[in-house]
Image (spheres, rainbow, N blue to C red):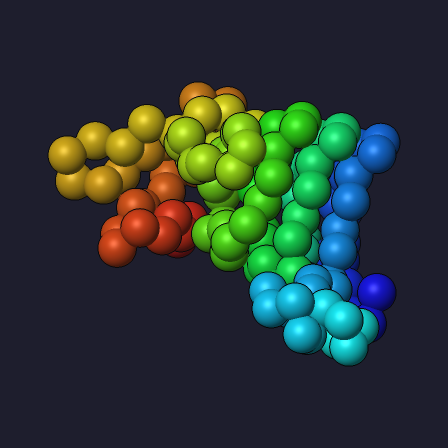
Length: 130
């Protein structure tokens, strides 16, 4: 590829996963000229990427994300997200212990194992420091 791929600490990547930073022009003229379009990919810490996942150019994946096998990630992913499908769709949130997070009307969820609390605000999840 023609741009960097940054992979954080403690990232697990399943077999046959493709991380690509290069694309091609949409126009026939651009393709005939063999032009490449490069965008970097960044993967945060503690991310789990299932087998046969495809991550496209320009994608940034936040910390503590889980991506199910076979997903095609086409856009930036917020921390603690759970993604599935083609194209990848966020179907929920995960705690650092791998449990689904269910937020109450105040936007607060608690991990059943660690008892760590999380806040969902403006489409982003953060740990609550208590």
